[in-house]
Length: 140
Image (cartoon, rainbow, N blue to C red):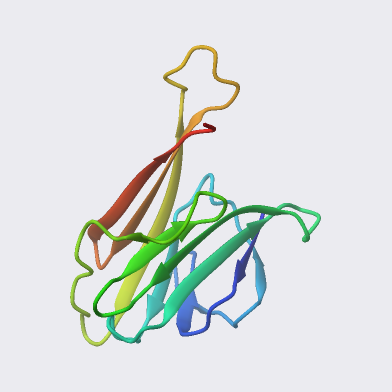
């Protein structure tokens, strides 16, 4: 799977060490196995966004997407194909040493519905080690 970082203000991304990322750069990444971390120096009330798109190997078919908008009055998130922006249920923590470190985690578990064709998927978004939202996805 490839990841496309489509909103700039991302300073670094993924792996054991921080690697500088460029806007709209495709990066080979297996979100099913490893959370992605993004470090930014933008303030949480900057009215900017973090936007990730995950592509299949053909580099044209979108597999998933997630975005967080850092508006001061109403920070929101959206998951591609899952409806409009939704207000974050938990407060975005303050920057540490001027930085926000975001972690996007995708987990799959055995489906609760025995007739389901796919595993249950959960997406968790954290900022500076604090959970800002966890969403359980379904194919309904």
